[in-house]
Length: 617
Image (cartoon, rainbow, N blue to C red):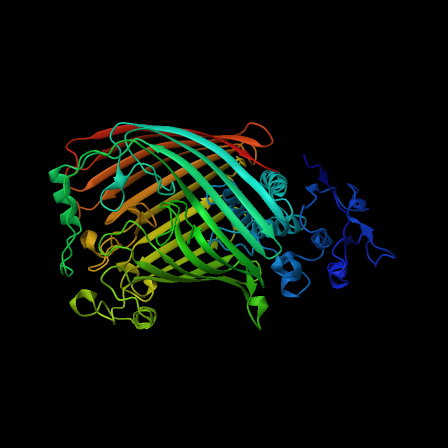
């Protein structure tokens, strides 16, 4: 275990870096030392006249330690060029895989950011690389030494930083098994497994198949890095109970729900009654990609996840609700200061071209997506981002440079004959806007965020009453109960101005399967023409031991589902650190749903799973 240290204050912030001596650290105060000293020479010794302020010794490049100062805040150091957003030039040339979105690292870093300790954090483009997570931890360490937090949040922040610093060890070339895990679960009672039409019992589970009965997962993740290059592989063996039968009335309902006012050519979607599917066992990669890093950016290709938004229920465009898809991605690994005016803030971007699976109308479509994320001001904590993405090609659609050009630049709807066999078919275009703000006066406790989506607008804020919204708030520590946090989030895919049914969003007259991958919604699982509200309260025993309980209610509109729908879920989740390397995760849920057009009467199920995870350190 890492010990806590109290460092000497270093006034020459960038001296070792400028000298090109990243392995050396300065320890003199007020003047440059006569000679540099190795990192171990920094001891748990407070400077005269200063209070002991324990923090773990960062496990990053030792030169970063030279920036732990009292007089210079991280943001001003970045702006002045003393402490680049990449921390050190060498860091921009280190290849780094991303941290999976189901890791405990994300809620820990978000909590630190809400405390005001990571002003450069940008949540709209995730997952983050391990390198970016390390950068955020170091930034929080720097700022905590100058910030006056109340006793409760201060102690919570130090506990989180100690655990994160230990988890995110300095990069080293070579191969490493990252995690090994096993999960067993069950759903006792009728399960909902179709968020695109009616609903979903388990949300944000990487598109793992749902069904009544028992399931099991065994997985392993591994990474390899060498200089700029990196490789990541997460493999799972999955056992599932199979799929329930679709009777004739349900098949007719699904056909009706997907019937657009202008039927596509050559035929509309038609569902048929099917028999129950047997239990299955399969092996598949959950993520599998490789890439190269340069200039604070990364270019990668393979099966990799996207999470584009600030919320927990799930962003509208891309979330962890569906299985990751194969894509080519060029992305800013870390925040970059604005050119010419770095004091104004920073930006990140992500450019993606990929392929979706499980589509039938049409089959095998591609998509392209672009997102720009901005954070403004010196520690003002205002973040906003803009997304544009679209579907194109697929069976019956010519795969040409001309069709790609029209898809990228056109602002019109589908071409003649609803786009089939039309070389100028622009595809199915979508846009998104999201923002996150640290509330003035409560900037060390509370953040609010919003995410808006549009299917027919260049930007959803052009017509805010005619688009889906997801809004939420996160309280990092309840006053008087510093270990307790609280989150409230509400999402609606029903327009605020009127209810236009389920043909308004996430579906298209040509691309009927639109916002799905292998039948799961790519984004928020609230579904079509529905409204959901969710509250969560969590208690942090330690950084890696936490219990969370919540309640969610999802209401489906009567203009979409005859008789509407009500789905209510009460759930609890816990993570317990068994040992230094091993943890136990437990999830339990009680669900009640009333969907008259799908199943008569009120239905109930009780479900849950437990998982044991070994993590290498």
